Length: 350
Image (cartoon, rainbow, N blue to C red):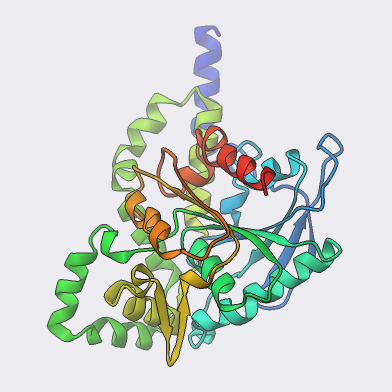
């Protein structure tokens, strides 16, 4: 590329990022909405003509709360949904949508007993009653495992949990958080969350940026040094868009997360207590794949690997590691050769 071409591309990219509409408009994989009730929109991704013929394999993608469902379909080359289509599978996605003050009474039970079971049954029915493979990212993986444990009657063949926190004793900063909470018995945080009706979307976005502080600090230099690299900047732009769309947590859900998982570490002990009810990870009988990231600062690999000692009833259990950030292990530049490859092999052998 000539110097003049480089300068021209750099100028065009700078304008697009600063004053224009951006470098690359969203380009989601084609999909059909099968149901659009509040907090349970169900999509079926449609197969392009070039993809392999579909099998009976039904795969339901389970996002976490406080993160947009686009995590599974960021860009055409960063899309787990498209990868699943290309490998002959039928991917579906449950999308919780926006979380507002009106949703403050929603808790873990709403997802474990209602939203996810409904999505699983509708996915299975759409594939002629085929069993469903769940793929959850972050706390979406935790919710998928808890749903499988609480409802053995559901047609769940396997659960893949990527970056799922399964032991809060091994989460970064948790000992410090607990030390502060002891001063008030955890009441201050609970009261603040109740008053706000949950964790507002704006706060979750700020918190995510804090965990990626090095990215935020180096962003100006990164942009300046890559102004002529449109593809590189487009990937950055997709992450920015993802972060800007983060929803919040319902008040009751976060209260349970704070009390039962963060402070009491129920999940790390293998049994989550919701009121008088106890859900044991040992009751998961499906096949399980866990993927942790040694460089993941949000959910360290050790917090994911902890599931290998609590998921004792699984039909089979594998643990793998992948490089990258919390989002990167799911859909980063190396995910295709690591996480997606592990997943393809795991599902192919079931």
